[in-house]
Amino acid sequence: MDVENPKKLSEAIADLDDAVNRTLDYFVEYENTLNIETLVKHFLALRDNRDKLSGVFETLDGLYNTLSHESLPARFEEAEVDGITVDGRTVSVGGRMHASVNKEQAAKAFTWLRTHGLGSLIKEEVNSKSLSASLKELIESDAIVPTLEDGIKVYTQQYMSVRKK
Image (cartoon, rainbow, N blue to C red; front, side, top):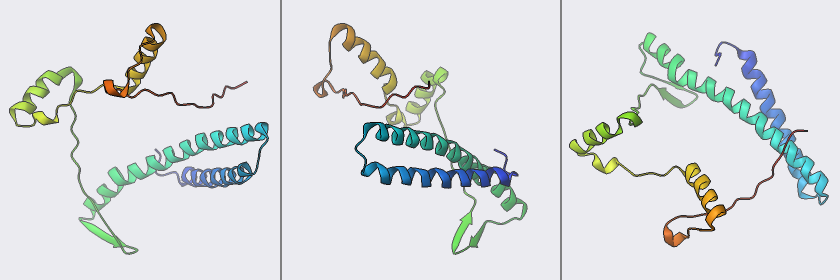
């Protein structure tokens, strides 16, 4: 993220404003529309706006994270300032510890956690995307469908598929 480029931020904000206004226009018209072709056009416009907003949010998130994690903490340290109040809000530098288990070293990490009284943090997990794909294959080939009594929730969510010409 290029923090020194105000033009990029300005363009992102203009894109966001345009996308929000277009989405609102389509939504208002959508409520009173019964024609399926028109509904599909609005759906596609909303989808395009969602994609556009995704890029705008990515730009804004990048700027926010750069300021929050790098630029402002460095400036506070240079100025030897712990906090500052601006527009009635106090802003200060904080720290947050992050930890994760290295998958290749999981056995060692689990031993360490148990040794230090943190064994309760260890959870057996199933990746939901892998489970969905595996169950889809199993259901299609063997027609075996797990139920909530089996502890597995299975449902099909409908969605609109869109392909480019």
